[in-house]
Image (cartoon, rainbow, N blue to C red):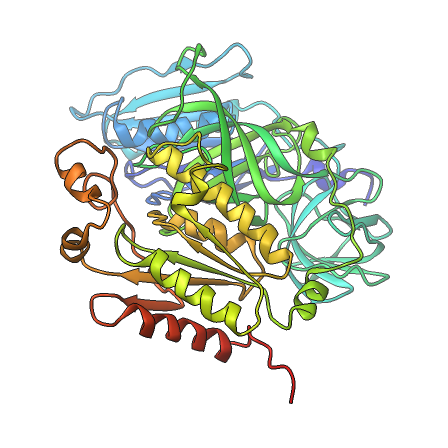
Amino acid sequence: MPPHAHEASAPLRLLLCGLRGVGDIDLPNRSIRGRPLMVSDLRGTDDPGALARAGAGCEAAVVVSDRPLPDVGTRRLLEIVRLIELDHMLVLVESPDGEETPPSQTGSAAAREPGEVTVTLGRNSADLRRHLDDWLDSLPDVAPSPDAPFRVSVSGAPSAQMAVATIVAGSVRPGDRIAAVETGRVAGVLAVEVEGEARAAAGPGDTATIRFDAPLGPVAGDVLAAAGDRPETCDQFAADLLWLGPDPLLPGRAYRIEIGPRQVAGSVTRIKHRLAGDGASSASSTLRSGDRGRVNLSLAQSIAFEPFERNRVLGTFTVADTASGRTVGIGTIDFALRRAANIHRQAVDVTKAARAAAKAQRPALLWFTGLSGAGKSTIANLVEKRLFALGHHTYLLDGDNVRHGLNRDLGFTAADRVENIRRVAETAKLMVDAGLITLASFISPFRAERQLARDLLAEGEFVEVFVDAPLGVVEARDPKGLYAQARAGRIPNFTGIDSPYEPPAAPELHLETHRRSADELADEVVAYLDRAGFLYRTGG
C-alpha cells in the first residue's frame, strides 16, 4: 500500500443524533467523493456523555427534531455538538404545518464552509433525502490529517504482545514503533488486523488487533502512541465546561471524570468565569444547568491527554455524578496546568507497610457519618479508647475540632461542606499513610464527598460507619440545642432541617443508636476491625 493510501479512503464519520426522529432517515452505504460514509446513529439517546464521546471521533453531524427551534432538547444537542466543534452541521427540523422553508446557514467566522445549516422540512421523505444528499455532497474535504500523530485507545489485551484497540488519530503499520504512554514501554508492530483480516495499515475509526514484537503489557484503558511523539500525562487542566446537571456545580465536589479511555475520580477546583452565549465572561462561584464556563480540573491520578485543538478524542472529557453515574457535564481541555507537571512524588524508603508493621496493625480510615446528635463522636471516642488500650496507634479527627483550626475559614454552605470534607479526607489519607488507624467523625452529608474520601485510599482501607438515628430521636436528644435553633431559623443550612443528608447506600457498618447502647456499638466496631484483619495479634 502506498504511503497514506488508507487515509485517502478514510471514511467520513457522521454523528446522527436527535431526541426525536424526523421521518425515516435512511443512510445506505455510499461514498462521498471516494470516501465511505460511516454513521454513528445515536438518535433517541438522552446520554450527553455518549453523544460527546461519539461526536469527538466524527467530522460532521446531523441533528434532527420534530419541533420548531428553539426546542429545549434540540438546543441542548446543539450546545454539545458546538462544544466539540463539529463545524459541519445540518439541523433538520420538521415543520408543524408541513411547510418547507429555504435552508439558512449560520456559524462563526472560524467555521469552514458549509458551516451550520438549518432546514425546516415538510413531511415529504423525498425532500428530506434530497436535502441530506445535497448537504453531504457540499461538504468540503474534512478527512483526518494523514500527518496526525498515531493515537490508539486500548479496549482489550489478549496477551502482553497484543492489543485490541480503536485508532483515534493517525495510522499504524507493521514496522512502526509504538509506546504505552503511561508506562513508557516501547515495541515494534509485527502485524495489524481489522475484522480478522491482515491490513497494511489501519486508520481513524478502525478497531484493530495489533501484534507487537516485544511485551508491551497493554491493559484496557491504556493509550498507545507513536514512540517518537507521545502525548503528555498530567492530573490538572484548564478546561471549557458545559454543565448539564440538575444541581449546580460545586467546586471541590468529587465526580467521575472520563478522558479518552480512562475514568478517574476528580473535581473542578476553580471556576474562573462563566461564558455567555456571545462569548462575554462574568465572575461566578458555580455553574447551573446549561451554563458554560472556564474551569480548572483536578484528577486523582495523572492520565494521558492532549489539548482539544490537537486531538478531539483525548481532549474531550465527561463529568458524571458518582452516585447515579449520570453525565452532568461535558468539557474540552485547553492545556495542562504547569504547576501540576512540575510537581513529582518524592520516593521514600520507609513505606506505609513498614510503618504499619511496626505498629502491629493494618492502617485504616473509619469514617463515622450521620446526623448531628446521632452519636458519631461518642462512639468514635469509645472505639479509640478501646484500640488504644489494646496497644494500637490511632488518631481521631472530629468535625467540631477541625473547624477550630484546619477549617476555621469555612462555613456551612453546600460548597463549604464539600471543601471541609475534602481537606479532612486529604489529612486522613496522610495519617493512614503513617500507618495509623484513623477515625473521622463528621456529618459528611453528601455521598459524593464520602466517595472522594474512599477513592483517596487503597482498596479495603476505607470503612464507612453509618451512625443512624431517626430525625425525631436526634431532635429529642439535641445535646447542643442546635435543632431548636435551626427550627427557629437562627442556623441556616442545617443538615436534616433545611439541608439534605444522603444516607450511605452500602456502609461497612450500620449502627442504630436508638436501638443499642454506645458501648455495645463501639464493641461491634472493634470486633469488625479484628475480623477484617486490621488488628494484628502479637505475643504468644
